[in-house]
Amino acid sequence: MYYDEGVSKTKIARGLGISKAFVVQWTQACDQDLEQDARGWPKGQARCWDDKVYDRIEQLHTTLTSDPGEFFTGATAIQQRYRRRYPRSPVPPLRTIGRILAALGLSSSRKQGRSKGAARYLCYPEHTVYHRLGQRVMEADFVGKKYLAGRTAPVNFVGLCFKQAPKLRYFQRVTGETTTALIAVCQAFFERFETPDVIKVDNGAAALGSGSAKRTLSRFMVWLLQQQIIPVFSVPKKPFSQASIEGNNSVFARKFWNTQTFRSLRMLDRRLGWFNASSQRYTGYEPPSPQRSSRSKAFVPKVYFIRQVRDDPNHGPCIDVLNEKIVLPVSYTNYFVLAAWNLNTERLAIFFEKDLQSKRIKSQKFTVNPNSRFNLY
Image 1 (tube, rainbow, N blue to C red):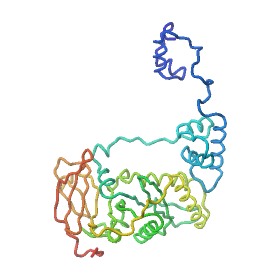
Image 2: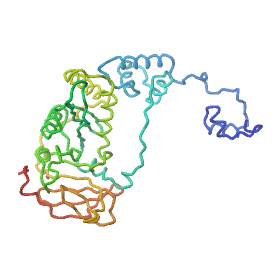
Image 3: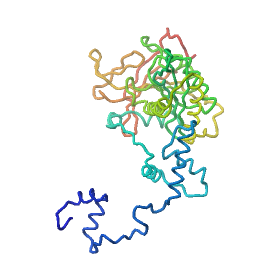
Image 4: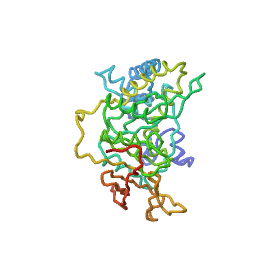
């Protein structure tokens, strides 16, 4: 094809289903006998994994899909189950299991979103939040409203997750998107699993508080700080800044909510417990040890706000923190910054992260509103 017919190496590789590197190597080799197979194992058969492994993976997939208490049936779940069921046998890698599932017609592809890297380009302070504010960072958010057939009132959920190992996702049904519900779910989570150092939440009224009053502490902020937990508020109207919990909410919809019809709240709560247990098995979560028995006496109460600098027609380049405009140099327009409100000194410091290094670019007085309904002291 290459020498006699002039077909390009790329077309040969695509037509024969082989790599271009092999085509290049073969066309440059002295011995060009295509009939010779020096691989050492039959063509069309895996080198290390025989039919017994194929049968085991197929059986495990059938077991997972037929169990109403299991919600994860992909390569990771099968590898975990394989390791437990066949402890004395070598465990196939995830990629091998994925290929076997595809060969058996048991895999389903999901279209991935396109990432443009805007967060990194615009200096989103991820390294500071996840590596400098505390060891354990948890994200929390309300799941979008759901509805049961024949029921007009919406069903509400709170989702909690740890992005970094040991990873965990957890969901709880609540009566409404209120501060009371959010605190109750967090408190129960801390008692059952672990207490984080930092909680990252969105700017909803249940967490941030008043939508009009300036420099006020919300009830949720005060409660977290009393537990010596640092609140971090994500960028308004930017779901990617809560990427982990948003991704877990997507898993909740695909693996749980959209897969079955719930006839009652009792049925919903029971199966939600199954889903949480299945998620914990899937991530392999175990609470860190040892658990912290007491909080540090040197704890400094701070509240953090991740914001994007925007050009305001009345103020110029600025960010909005608790309904106050904080003016910044024009060079930071469109970039992300991290605002740290120290409640002991009542000052607001603005930090800019670049190449994993954070520097302070502004500091100003930021007193707590004396009319604030909730106070830390």
